[in-house]
Length: 180
Image (cartoon, rainbow, N blue to C red; front, top):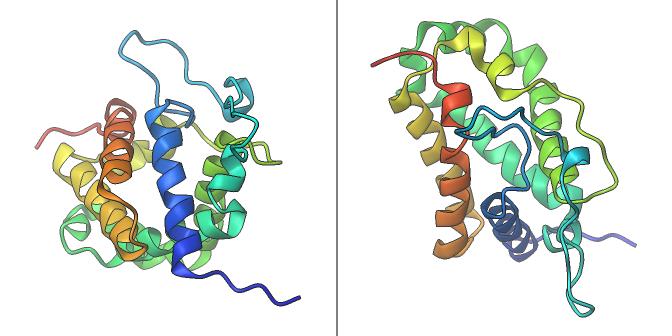
């Protein structure tokens, strides 16, 4: 049976990603107390009511998650504000062709595992993965704007977008290492 994914499926899934993020179920965000980061396998599974599907299912599964990740990941590469960062620009020019498919897979796996899907995330902590880029708060905000644009493309409702941006912002201390 040929099942094609439509924008509604992705939008429903992306909205659920926002809900997961708002509940603090996404890994590697850390907290202000300096507590160690957790991986999806260390988080408490999402509780659902008998009539509510699992979080992973509400996200639309792996393919819907991958569609959102694919879109914002591609846009990050060509974003002029982000390409002002010499380390990001160099990565985009020399590493992206070989490494971007794996990065998209890792980002997708990270979200799918956090959502209770049948996966384990074993990637790097955010602080380690972003250390070489010396990111500023402005660049961090621009990545968040690209995520919002991807969510807009898939028509994710405003409330879920706001929740996702709030959760994304919680990871700022792990990612931003430079001053303006």
